[in-house]
Amino acid sequence: MNETLAVVTSRRPHYAWVVAGVTLLVLLGSAGFRSTPGLMMDALHTEFGWSHGTISAAVSVNLTLYGLTAPFAAALMDRFGVRLIVVSALLTISTGAGLTMLMTQSWQLVLCWGVLVGLGSGSMAGAFATTVSGRWFAARQGLVTGVLTAAGAAGNLVFMPLLAWLVEEQGWRTAVVVVSVSATVVALPVLLLMRERPADLGLLPYGATEEPPAPKTDGSAILRSLRILREVSRSRAFWLLAGSFAICGATTAGLVGTHFIPAAHDHGMPVTTAASLLALVGVFDVVGTIASGWFTDRFDSRSLLITYYALRGLSLLFLPQLFAGSLEPPILAFVIFYGLDWVATVPPTIALCRRHFGADAPVVFGWVLACHQLGAAAVAGLAGLSRDRFGDYDLAWYGAGALCAVAVLLCLGLGRTTAARPVTAAA
Image (tube, rainbow, N blue to C red):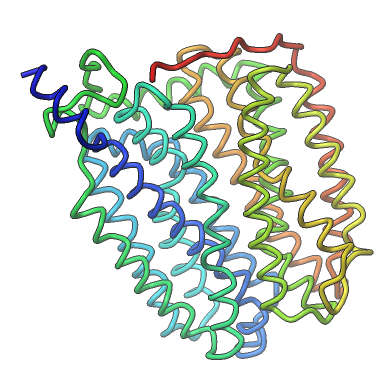
């Protein structure tokens, strides 16, 4: 049997790459779906008269549920299967986006885009990429995890320019129909091609020499997640990591991801141009994330975080002076610089979780990620309120720069760590 498998796998690509490809497609789409409210903010304000703070409340609920769902999503996938959970999540996104066409009250936006899309996208957060890479890959696991993580940002590149054009030329309802239909279409390859584990096809994980132990599926994973949270909540390192990562979420998804487009539009920039700039952030984010992973293998993770947050804070302090009615070199320079830093914090944060919490690091990072989204949710709402009160986003940008200084102080509170030794995976 093993000889037969060896012959088969040597003649054609391992099915793990098919599963990884489907996962990549889903994560690309999920990232684009989440970004739509920022594109519709001015259109909804014009049609319904809702304030920026009211519309931002839906984004805040979305980001909160996205974060709180993440720590439990892996347990649900173990219990009920990846295919069922992911298809259910995509159909939930499709339903939430589609129902916004019928809304007439602001609470309906909160319910549809905040609750439904938030729960759907949260079910495919870090848990999906982590589960797939862990089940299907023994070799090149880090590479696959990094590529799938970067897909979350790269999704903006695929969807945002198109959705921005639809909002401008065809109206926001056309854009949400495209999101709803796309989420349903993306579910089809999951149904047709996704498999739970290599053993279902008589295979070992890519690069493995023996079958890994099957995870528990009796619901204990959820209880373990809560137990670990209770234990690490007594740790100073956890709160320093959670606090700094909450600021990371506040200054990326919460502020720039939600409000960059309306802020640029306030200065006369067309929505389509602003959306293209935000999409370009996703391009450089991929480069920055891969480079950060390389740095994390070779340098002190704490020092990397201090550098990343300091540079991000400086860039946000300069941003209010860089906006213009058209595409100018200064704002383009910001996009490139900021894009390289966007998710660069993830690899060193994961490395510090591993160093401080050992075998429990994946679950601990899930809770740290939840704090990331809670920070994003808080600032998404506060920035909208600031725009309503003062007529611009200047205070939000300066406040974000100050928050990055706080993140630097939190990272200084972590003990210095030595560079991790690179691990060479089997080919």
